[in-house]
Length: 276
Image 1: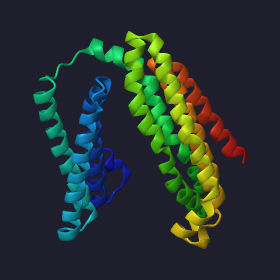
Image 2 (image 1 turned 90 degrees about the horizontal axis):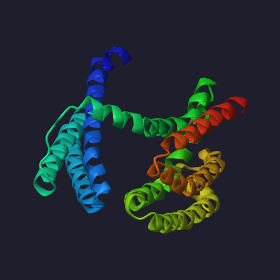
Image 3 (image 1 turned 180 degrees about the horizontal axis):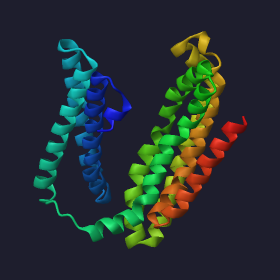
């Protein structure tokens, strides 16, 4: 319904509805993935995500070759997300256990009370990298927005180790926190060591190869993106090293402290951008 307030163009409204539904159905699959991670059965998540990627790629190519339009591509994404969600539900019911839908207000209240800081951290994670471009656009510095976006799109790949490490170590730390506090320290030490192992090469390679990479991908007109890319890769390396501390706070049910750190970070980021 929000599409009716966002634009008066019927085609864009339909596009927003399709993509919004696609995002919702994709988010529903995360419920099953969270269960697999909690049971340290991430192999099922990997198989399902490979299936999703192949299905989406196949449908996308089919639509592009036969019915090329933005609406049809969005509809194809929506259909593939529905098929993937149905397949996951059937697999989960047959392989893990049969589930049923039960609405319990008390359970929802407890879940929301404990999880809202994590939800807000996700919001901050989406909002944080957009502060600079939004302020630059507001000030009319369109070229700077393009340079920043070009650098950010490449530097974003430096955050892949964050996702890989967190999904690998978080379930193990959660189980160790419940069953064996002594092994929790060992697991967290390995997590931190792996984060440092990825962080330093990320910063060094980003600084050294920024110029040839930007020139190769975008040309010499985007030379101002070089310094931005170097700064962003260094920032990414710092984020990789801080992630173990963030995850252990969540494991130990201290997510509100984590939330406060993220809130202060976003606040300082906005302040520094306004001053600059």
